[in-house]
Length: 374
Ligand code: NAD
Ligand code: GLY
Image 1 (tube, rainbow, N blue to C red):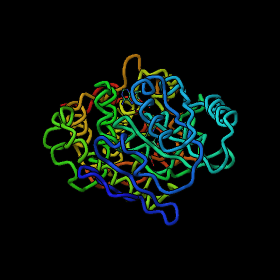
Image 2: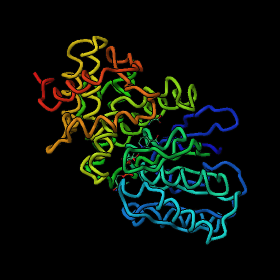
Image 3: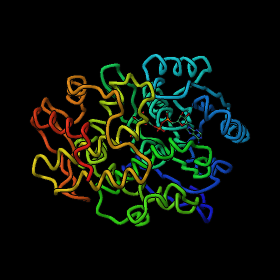
Image 4: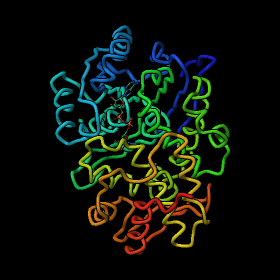
């Protein structure tokens, strides 16, 4: 890797021969090839969606072509609905048609949907080609672009089909966040809040002190907060790449969050972060109800998330517990019973197995009733 601009931070994900750099900074897109490892690629595919493509793809394609890479642009519709087998097959068909070989590369330019889909396609095409992530949402910059999880959804539950396929580099250009809608920005803030809740490190003091400050953040603040989150994720991924232990903590709030998204048919009623936000309040209620968590956890979660403009209870009409329960049971952490990441207090997560379904139901009722509010 070449010398970084003054404003860029490099964080390493240490995974032996599959280690890679995550660059966080502003205006990285213009000089993206200077951050690429020497791989001898001849062709590049840029996968994006039809919101991000018109904003950023032309510049990326031009840069790649200027470096003698034969480049094709592939575009999918925006939204969770694109994380399907069918869409992955279409992407793979595009690579086949353009004569891609195993020594070529895929660039994922977009949010977590594009990243998960591109990663999945790149991991199975010819048994795996290189992947470079250029995340353009806060969600993707702080979470989904790092760690190599790829996925498509099934109607019954989210992320049920996927692979582990680490990228060879991740470029988080903070300036791309300028075009993000407030709703999508806040969705990313839910994952930032998650890091804040599962870690005892004071990586974002301004977030705890005044969450609203983050929503009005300058590029410098954003780059600092993003880099802190990336550091946290990189450490958990390096410690547990295959998600059998501490990496589970990153799923705080996701058990109910994923179930809400799936129950809505991935129709966009919940953004991923909105589902996680509601899911974290639920996880806090379950933590309290099991006796593991300190009293008042759900209330303080809720206060913080409301300040960030995030939902803290299921939107009406809320799905019934009988619809949610089987979806939560399919959580990938599960080995048969109900399993969730819970908190003893902020910074002290724990994976708890064999949770009592009736306790889960009563906590869901409490969530619907807003029982955690003062
Ligand atoms: P997304 O990819 O759907 O992006 C949200 C919206 O913002 C889309 O409409 C997109 O077109 C638009 N957009 C993206 N970048 C933009 C920009 N710079 N300017 C304007 N519009 C822009 O959603 P997301 O929140 O980025 O990601 C959510 C997905 O990520 C979910 O599928 C979730 O399961 C997945 N995820 C995966 C991991 C992982 O480890 N692999 C971790 C967290 C989340
Ligand atoms: N988003 C959860 C993980 O990467 O493990």
